[in-house]
Length: 115
Image (cartoon, rainbow, N blue to C red; front, side):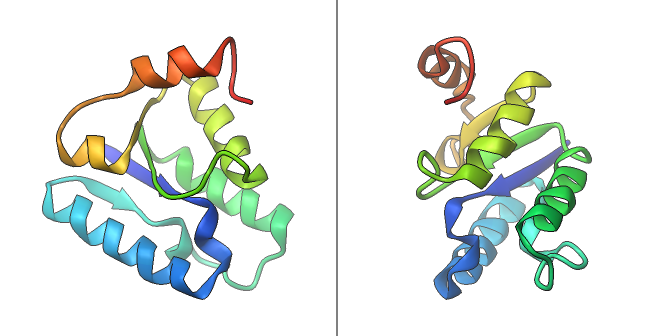
């Protein structure tokens, strides 16, 4: 099982630190993690090409972990809508670390789709 991580903070300098920390925590918990900031070409790409790279990484995964600010992020909403449509298991990072799924949380809050 591969776990894709995402957050809205990927463009900010501290975002790289957060992604690395989250990746290490989830890896230590036994997950095979794809950190989208480490995918080839993502650092040089513009938004559209970053989304293509992120989608490619997402398609290698079965599950999704999100953290930080994501509700007002166009990138996060886009990736989350793909994961939701494909019925991937989606949860906050802390819930993965506690081995609890929050698909019920996502479903209850999505109201027919991700907004």
